[in-house]
Length: 471
Image 1 (cartoon, rainbow, N blue to C red):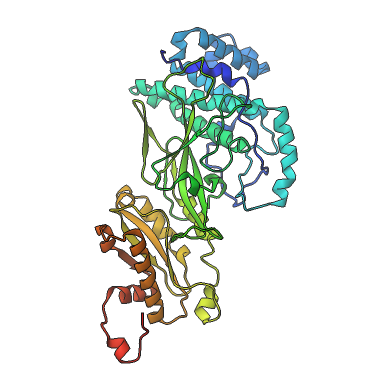
Image 2: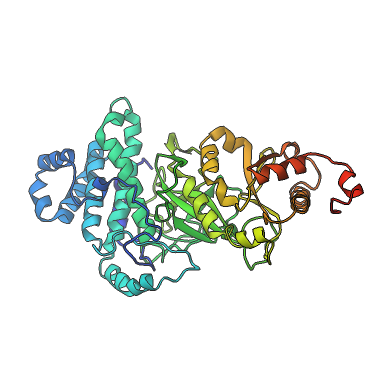
């Protein structure tokens, strides 16, 4: 069937994705919302006003924007030429986003997604009010879904006219509309699309769901490793002086893997996070008689993918590598018992080494060893600088060492050596990965002394002089 982007808009009017379980009007970490304020406006650009004027719909838009949008879409549906006209598609997308913004509750326009393990009293206080509001205004998700779909349709057709359209202000605004409306769709639809990557949802029908609507792209993690999905912008830290971020299409998210208290035998922190970018990609063609929705929300790994190929299009992937790292460094408990470890008191941790992602053969580990009274959190700025380099991301991976800094150098060196040996034997029992032979140790202060001990062979000198400890 010949592609017609707008043919599936009629089912979109049938319902919306659902509603979120969570409420609240402020970010739990005090982050700044990074989407341009003009996208969150209930108004439209001058170009869209001119198109409405030509269609004799401007006066109706001023009185009833929803009615004007429906009439404009109906006219576009009747005219195949308008279906492939970027200006008309953009106007429809902008109107849909503006109508959705008018319908969202002023007291909770950006519901925060909290971790499943967290029960904020003030958030739960808003829950019933928020759900009741959405139950009475189900078309909020209808219009956000339309804005996502139509802005993507515009961008797809605009790529065929890159010589002129890419320099148009509406091209840049369409990218912002896509990202914002998809973000709002995900926020409001969490009840229909639970946290894990095996979640199900539809973009056109509230009552039905399709299996495998979320697809992991480019990950070494499996769907079972995705225990939680959070919005990166909810936890962005403005105090980070150096950030790793790329701009494009998609919604940056935080994938969370909880390891504490389960049977997973691995070398990851109790809270392991990894960057995810959510992208809604409409199909290239449609079967209007199909009873099962085939749309996908791609959960892309921005660590290894700067772009995503969809048909003949290459989509730059919006990326936030810094916020997932900052969230893990704060939530994994690395800063606990630092003072006890320094004073030689009772502490519940021994020297350990943690992986941040599954090891890939061929990637050389960079082991970061902190200094006196330090923790892996000391490496945040350093990591953000290195992660921004695609060559480093492709060829290296980062491991964190953690140890009680008041303990003897020799004992800490012995335990870290044993930890590295255990990881090596587990990851490469056949000793076939040469990248692990080129492991790089980066130590700060006391960590530099430990790194020296780990990389130098003292023979039996320390044991013979009663200075060492046996393995």
